[in-house]
Length: 436
Image (tube, rainbow, N blue to C red; front, side, top):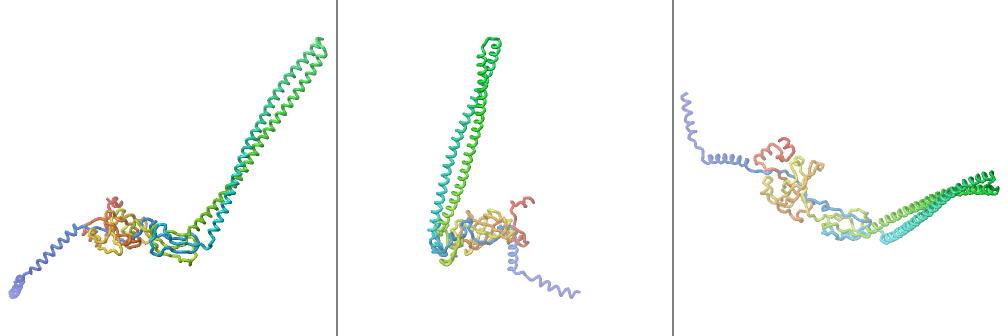
């Protein structure tokens, strides 16, 4: 036991005699300081969360997007004024078309002249019928007035006959009283037989007057009824003629309308054939020339070429993943990198990015494109620098975008990335309010 103890003691003394090199001590201290510094830096260094997407440059206004140039009339291409890549202004000629029939304009002119004659004849017929209607209305007015006057005269005759009848009846009563008086006097011998005979004769005359007056009254009444019927007949007959004339007037107006419609069609055809030159609808660049000169028969509406308008307000169309779309809202800041434009992007520190351009979320589509991607339109941020010019930023240029979200500590972002957690949801989200 003592021998073993003696043998171990010198080795333990030798271990204690060893010294740690100074460089190693310094290195260990530096590593500890770096670890502490890194931990502090991860805690206080800000990191800009973002979601990425890619897309292309498009025109925001629909009328500034590529447009098809179509044939206005049937025919063949007579002359091209442009080639692919030509710059055109609004109203500049693009192509001339020629119809298959060289005399089509002459024939259309003759058809227009004939249709104009038809319209004039129909309008004259309408005028004639209107004059006839006015004459019939005047005839109706005068005829009815005359018939009413005759009816009134008949009414007056009936009244006069009635008065005559009343007078005749009164005279008959007086004659009857007279003969009774004469007979009574004759029985007493106070009057002659002659006076009795004269009284009887007067009675017979008065009776005849009553009968004659009664007949006159009946005749006057019958005449009144006849004249009233004549008034109704004149009114009905004249009104029937007027209605018939109005029917003819409607038919004539229909002919005028048909002729005018036919004239409109002829004018449209003539205008289309007369404007066989296709002009540029707006400023832009000829992108494609499709039809070939003098070689193809074109129909109205066939594609001739494609025009790319000169854009004023370009936007970037980014396609974002469905998991990131709920985090994007209108007005969010975006950093953009355009294809062919050198850039150095630090997604977490956009302030030190080089060659990128600022944007702002303009619109987020309500539905996806059928593949789980949502379209986000980004416009230029007015508070940032301008985008490249039209020579660099043409429609269709590819672009990458970083939609900036909330700022968090760098350590939290690394922890989130390691664990696969989503970025921080904005406080304005309804789900966050409900949970709170």
